[in-house]
Image (cartoon, rainbow, N blue to C red; front, side, top):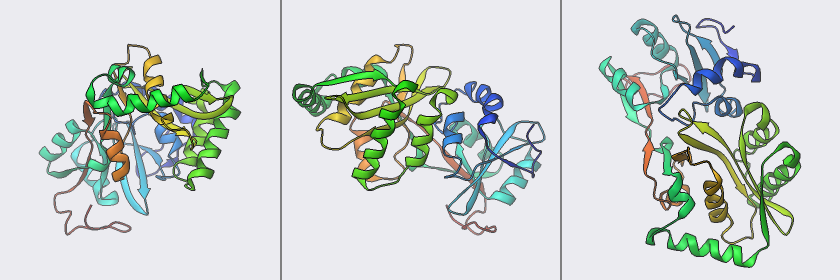
Length: 299
């Protein structure tokens, strides 16, 4: 049982039994709204769970000390909504339909471009046809003609090899990034029902992809894609290779957001997304002059 707001508790793996079926019913395809995502990034965003008056779960969190809340399973009555805004100041990962409803109820919605999810046709990434993908095809051709490679389904028996890729990636890049979440994703992939692929060159594990289905199985969501340095065309190869082995029932692939990183944005745009999963941040109408403990007045 989850406590009633304003009480809240830490998110644990045991909450999957309650939350995964609810997330599975969502159809708007927001990458944050899968149990694996909120669980793996629970420390980064300090997620806590509560329930509202209608018994629907809600997520409370903090980014850099700044509080926010998320309501993936529906909007509460106006009085409770106003209380949440008073206490937390901002609602995050708001869908386009929710943003319209909240605007009609007197709140202010602002497009969160840095967190738009990139959506691609699975077939486009698998085929890489046409002039716009010419450079990527050349990079893949260079990789496959230069290296003796193989691919395997990412199963528990190959966990040590996938962890080696992740550790090598961190050591070579000098970045921590999402290392902790990515490692736990591998270690808990069976319990979280994550699937992926593992890639080798000359028997050395060099890359892996890990994700899950989303939006009623219409979309495959890529949570993690890691590769070691020194293999030209490797990222382009695993991108195409994994898309080509996904079942055709997945019409689209969600490759998550660019987080405002311009290099990452350019790379994601270079694959010609078919569209975006738009997200919004929502504030009280007077948010320019409003503030609360731990909050800034502006987004």
